[in-house]
Image 1 (cartoon, helix red, strand yellow):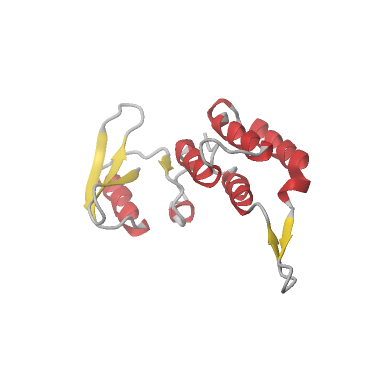
Image 2 (cartoon, helix red, strand yellow):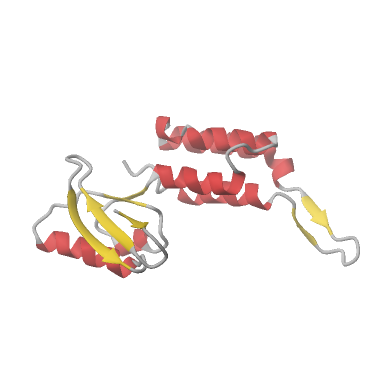
Amino acid sequence: MDTTYFGRKFGLMVFMDNTTRTVLNYAIVSHETNSAYKQGIDHLVSLGVDIQSITCDGRRGLRTLFTRIPCQMCQFHQVQIVTRYLTRRPKNSASIELRRLTLEIKQLDKDAFVNRLDHWYLTHEAYFNERSTNEDTGRTWYTHKRLRSAYRSLRTNSDWLFTY
């Protein structure tokens, strides 16, 4: 299930059967909300559709909304999130390697992915934890915020990326 927008306030929410590639349900929405997804799933259940699993874009709250149906975050959406943080052509070796690992996600299982992510972290831990300092105030912050965000996203979603 996913929503695609055609303008700011016009979206098409689609529920699709992955096996037959047929659209099971759709709705025109102005905003993508968890309640709209719940209504769509409830409608399919009321029609007698046996929902074996849900693949979605990783929207907050969807995991907890459908507790009796296995949910997986779409791996394509995860790659897009990491790309948004690191760009398509990152410059430093830590970002290049993390992006490469992310692009290989569809060929890996959960254990292999987590092991490689852990290895990446151990290899680049010093760079990852670099801090910058404001000379005037002494305030510090992480230097590579976007790299940290990309890694955090992968780490947080790793349990949800390999449901199947």
